[in-house]
Amino acid sequence: MSQKQKVVLAYSGGLDTSIIIPWLKENYDYEVIAVAGDVGQGEELAPLKEKAINTGASKIYIEDLQEEFVTDFIFPTLKAGAIYEGKYLLGTSMARPVIAKRLVEIAEKEGAIAIAHGATGKGNDQVRFELTIKALNPHLKIIAPWRIWDIKSREDAIDYAKERNIPIPVTKEHPYSMDRNLWHLSHEGGDLEDPWNEAQENVYLICTPPHLAPDEPEYVEIDFEEGIPVAVNGQKYKPVELIETLNKIGAKHGIGIADMVENRLVGMKSRGVYETPGGTILYAAHHELESITLDRATFQYKQQIAIKFAELVYDGNWYTPLREALSAFVDSTQKTVTGTVRLKLYKGNCTPAGVKSLYSLYSEEFATFGEDSVYNQKDAEGFINLFGLPLTIRALMEEKRKG
Image (cartoon, rainbow, N blue to C red; front, side, top):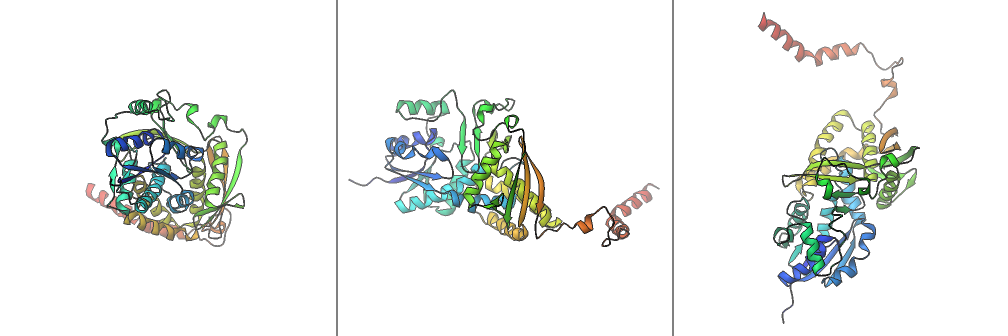
């Protein structure tokens, strides 16, 4: 009797991947190997081993990817200042390539011929998973059940699970699609699909609603070394611990709630609510430090490439020459982004309250409104005359043409 071919499944234990295990066995007769990438989901991972085996997987890998997630994906994106469409701090977008990378590694180790995932045919995650797989091992077959099975809705999926006695973490009455990791928690679906509906307070599972946050502000200081955060309030932390610490501080004060209608890569708009407390604090602090350590031309050009960087990450193009080239540029800019930033946290607001660096380009001696001996204000007249010369010539020519 020939040995069954193997498929590696990106497994979360959620609704979609819970029913994919029996579906793969029923339709392909594959041996299913489940892989759960631990990117900071917390207690969600605890029941996965028993659940995966009970629903038909031959084995399950639960891989701790948190440190790799932070150092190789979150920090490079933070240093780039990349934010998708002005609000989204790319929590899910950054997590997918680190998970997909491990899927490829395990598929190669197990001799699997395919990788399966539970991303829908309407979403961005299918692209993020599959572009990473194609970049790292183009010989692996990809199976995306949502694009080929007869299940058409989350309600159908719930019914499919109940028919097979598979426990699932959602109900028809609480149909939110959520993705949680160390960096954020996202919410989609349900009443959020109507952008006129305000997000209800029970949606928030990490952040305190701002109006319920403490009535007293809290100050937090963050130390950076070459663009990378290394300490909070003078205490050095390892990368994962640092984000966990800031998550707790920020969540208490309602920091990091983003409600947006975004443009998905596949062409449609979707509404999402994101909770990113620690990440929001880090982005604010990093921006403040760059404001005194980068010259105007570099700072402004970096802001332009941040938009492209965010688009690349959002679209699943992590393993591309362009993303790598942009990261090389960003790393060059970060050589002087070392110093300390103080922020004031109060009821959802993250306000700058101080910044210092040995590499600061800010000079009080030059910038002062008081008397100084380093700047000759008369020099400004010649500068303005030359800087405004094109405008002067244009006005003279217009005057001559009309006359």
